[in-house]
Amino acid sequence: MSKLPGERLAGYESWDGTDPFEDHAGPFFFKKTGTGEVRCAFEATPTHCNGGGFLHGGLLMTFADFSLFAIGREAIDGHAVTISFNAEFVAAGHAGDIVEARGDVVQKTGSMVFLRGQVFTTSDGNERILLNFSGIVKRVRRKPESH
Image (cartoon, rainbow, N blue to C red; front, side):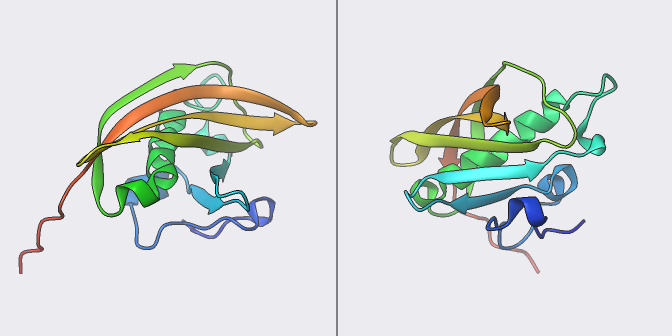
């Protein structure tokens, strides 16, 4: 699957390296705005939908988890794992939507970063919240690779 954003997501980038699950579920992208805010986005397709034709809840939670790491990238400063994740579904999304996320770091301790955010889409200038989320990521040292 291509990790290059489409025309509708010009200015976004993907992670250096790969995350096979996120690559399969997405692809997801992020960018830092002129004000320093991190925005994440993906272009929803029919493969992102459930049997009812709406964006799958598991997809939205996966995107929100990706967003935790993009939003908290500077605070995390290395490798981390999600240790807590909460989500509240607010509205349904659809194939064809550009789905975005924004958020902020609530607190950083020695090894943990607490974050919160919203997943949303915009149509005709009107923003619609799809999901509220919060999470805690724990900074970890990466195990050396065995040969």
